Structure formats: structure tokens, C-alpha cells
Length: 286
Ligand SMILES: Cc1cc2nc3c(=O)[nH]c(=O)nc-3n(C[C@H](O)[C@H](O)[C@H](O)COP(=O)(O)OP(=O)(O)OC[C@H]3O[C@@H](n4cnc5c(N)ncnc54)[C@H](O)[C@@H]3O)c2cc1C
View 1 (cartoon, rainbow, N blue to C red):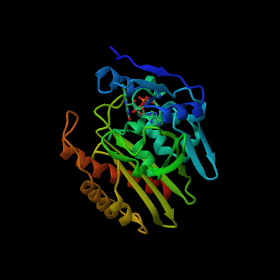
View 2: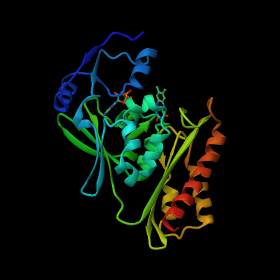
View 3: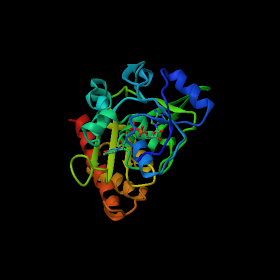
View 4: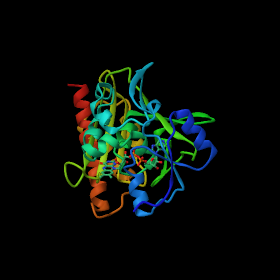
């Protein structure tokens, strides 16, 4: 049984933001997390505002060298968009492995990030791509790097009157490659036991910059900054990847739960980082 609540149905984004500024209302997009929370009694909001049909929040485009994805864009669109395939391959890979087709047709990128689960599958590829979030409210906008967005399990810097209006990242100017891997207890419709994403940008024969992200291994999705620093300016080599894997294992603070032990998650963090570094470097220096 769902608790009783008022449902607000704005026609435009402006109307939605004005309502959110005026009184406490909880946004609902695809509802794939919110409805579960309502049913379980974890959340009992008095009013909910439906933002799922706001056209201003949906779509994928390239503008001035940036990929811009509306906060209300559904996972299915990430899976199918040629722009994401070309400029955010790791995000497309994560969309393909996200839940099941029913959920992918409803769930949104903004809802996935705002929910702030350590296992949020769009978070790791977006961290690897170096994405930022455009947070919007009736009083203005602010651009927040995704790595500063998550505070703890299901806690973010979002204010009650703000929405994730857009997710954006810059298209690299040099040769680059990126990849994602989701380790679950089965191949489809599984929560990530560990997820990893890597992006490498090249400078001639050397690594100009690398971004390494891991999910389900700490209270929030995280970047492995020490490994990224270590890789900068280096020529790709097996020993380098082993060292990065070891730094990844040191960076995580996993828990044991019904899906896996903390030790397994730690070890797999290293395994996946080394694997994705090998794969992305092989893509660049074929
Ligand atoms: C069967 C099942 C399988 C699942 N499998 C996966 C999986 O494989 N991987 C995975 O990562 N997740 C999975 N999930 C979780 C869920 O589907 C995702 O987190 C989804 O992306 C949430 O998006 P939504 O639009 O449904 O969010 P909602 O449920 O509508 O909202 C989630 C939270 O985000 C807030 N919110 C929504 N949109 C915005 C916005 N634009 N700005 C600010 N706040 C906003 C809401 O207020 C709420 O707090 C699964 C869920 C189910 C039920």
C-alpha cells in the first residue's frame, strides 16, 4: 500500500522550480526508487512533484565541445544515442547492463545520481568521463563536478529546491578511450557487486591523463586519484597497470553483504582497474 500524498503535475520546468521554491515537495522522475521507498515506508512525503514529462529535462546533444544530457533522460536513451556511443562509450555500456528493459524505459540519469546509491551504475562511467552536473533552481544554477556531488550513502549536495537539470562532460581533444565493467551475481538485472570505469587520454606514446572510477566499494562512488596521478606522463606497461590496481585496492573501503565479502570486492577493484587500463590503452595504441 502506498501512503497518501498530494501529487503536483507541473506543465513546465519553470512551474516545477517555482513550486519547489515555495514549499516542500519531493521530485519523482521514473519513480523506480521513489515508489519502492514509498511502499516500504522509508519515505512519507506530504507532496510529490512529477517531473517525468518535462521536455526541458530530456535529451542528448553536443554543444561547443560538450556532451549535454538532460537530467530527465531515460537510461534507454543513453543506450541508443549515437552521441553517447561516440563520446561516452562507457556510459552506453553501463546503460546496456542497467536493470532490465522495463526499468531502463522509465529510470532517469538524474534519478540514478540523486538517489546516490554506492551502486548507481551511471555514476562510475560519468566520473571517468569527468562529468559535472548543472543543478537548477528558481534562484539560479550552479555547476558541480560529479566527484563533489556525493556526500555519503544516499546523501548529496542537492538542496531541497534544486533539480539535476543537466549532466555534461567535455569531449577530449586528443586521442582517447574509455570502458566500463559491471560485476554482478548474474549477467542481467543485477545490482553491481563492483563496477569500474576508466578513461585514458593520450599524448603521443604516453598517457596524458587517466580517470579511474569505482562503484559499490565505498559509501559513495569514487575516483582513484593516486593511481591517476601515478599514470600521468607514463608509457603504458603491464607493471604500471599492476601498480594502479594495487592503489585501487588501497583506495576502497568496501563492506561485506549478501552479495560479496569486503575482501572479494577489494580484490576485484584491482582486477577490474588493471583490466580496463589494459583494454583502453590497447584501444588507443593498437
Ligand atoms: C528492479 C530494479 C532494478 C534496478 N536495477 C538497477 C541497476 O541495475 N543499476 C542501477 O544503478 N540502479 C538500478 N535500480 C535503481 C533505479 O532504477 C535507478 O536508480 C534509477 O535510475 C532511478 O531513476 P528514477 O528516474 O526512477 O528516479 P526516481 O525514483 O524518480 O527518483 C530517485 C531519487 O532522485 C530524485 N530525483 C529524480 N530526478 C531528479 C532530478 N532530475 N533532480 C534531482 N532529484 C531527482 C528523487 O526525488 C528521488 O530522491 C533498479 C531499480 C529497480 C526497481
